Image (cartoon, helix red, strand yellow):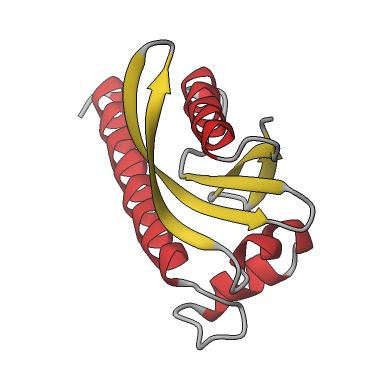
Length: 147
């Protein structure tokens, strides 16, 4: 087999593995209601627990797979937020979206636009609250603040 074809097949295999792994982790994350609960994956719980900024999203106060809809620039949109944390005391809301990509720059602008839509919809639903959007890059468990 020539090198070009071997490279293409290797890239397809690597991409499929990354996608399958990302989907598996995403499914596990949506079922974690608290870090004190029985873990589906102890390694996953450890990775979350090691970073207090990430662990904050996995408390009993957080919600998963939260549907939200509204108008943005005259266009109706309906979305599902991976995880949201609402603090009524501080009037702060944090939105978390999981991304499985190992190349964080490839679809970066698309992801930023997605998070900004979430932020706009939540701000409309919660006037007077400070709303911040984050991405959790699942390949290295790095939390990135978008807004």
